[in-house]
Image (cartoon, rainbow, N blue to C red; front, side, top):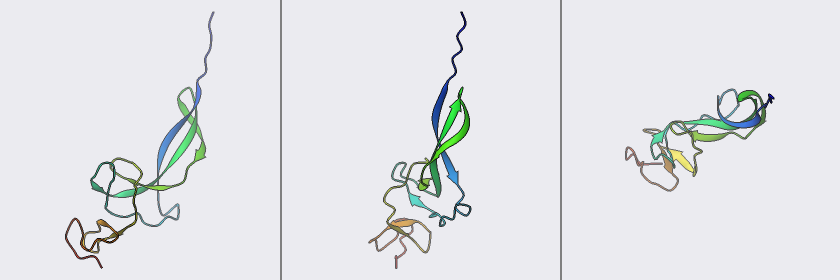
Length: 107
């Protein structure tokens, strides 16, 4: 006897967003990532849940909120209370008087 099993499920994907199309501010240039530890460019991403039939994504069924992520490891950036150095565009935590990368005085 032959049985047909149809596999249907929901699959999570991470979607990179274009900040101009989504009306989001320009992401910071270089942010030290809290996961990989490397100063990387950032991008806006959001989680999307897709309905899949037989492991083929058919349609999105849920869109999460957008958030800033490290472009290198794609993890959500934490502690974004930072300002950018005017010399090298590295983000520096508020309260720091000098840039951690180039040593420029933060004003």
